[in-house]
Amino acid sequence: MKSRDVINIAVAESSMIVRTGLISVLKHLSDLNIQTLEVTSMEGLQLCMESHRPDILIVNPMFDGWFNVEEFKRHYEAHEMKLVSLICTVVDSNMLKGYDDSINLFDDMDTLSSKISVMMNVSDEEDSDQETLSQREKEILGCVVKGMTNKEIAEKLYISVHTVITHRRNITRKLQVHSAAGLTIYAIVNKLVDISEVKMKL
Image 1: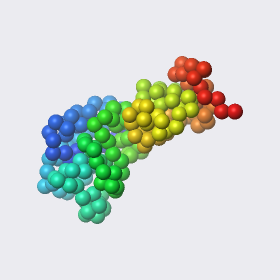
Image 2: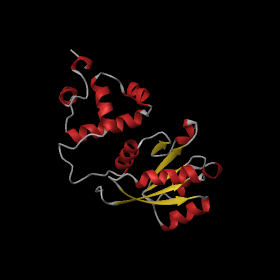
Image 3: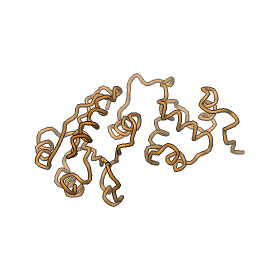
């Protein structure tokens, strides 16, 4: 999928504040061409699945009391759609089994854009070796060359380990640099870290 192809995203959430807030953020992801649809009830969700066939369905695991993700997937197994949990409260990790990914209220725009791009295999024909890193990617690259683990980076930046891994994948894709030494040189040359902060592995 190219970056300017339309990505249809349905948001199933009963809270108007959360639903419209997320849709507003999705519409501000300027690097992706996103069309959104609000879903407020199970009846609305059934109508959406029968008529619109979204590429991504973002749904609160507590939607309509409790959203049965396994039953939903069985019923709509013909749909090639990514199912993403919207985490607004503390949720038991067992409830998140079966989802392709999750987003939460503390994800920033870079994180949200990155997750959608990875799920939809978005590539930009105009990508080049000189593609610039986002501010979040620069932060993560700095942490990587300082020798921090994915878990340590996630804890420091208050993001999930999965998000750290996604950002690291995007960093190596953008820079076309796959070695630790290469990333370290890039970070020092671009003043993302001071040479004294780099953890040398001999």
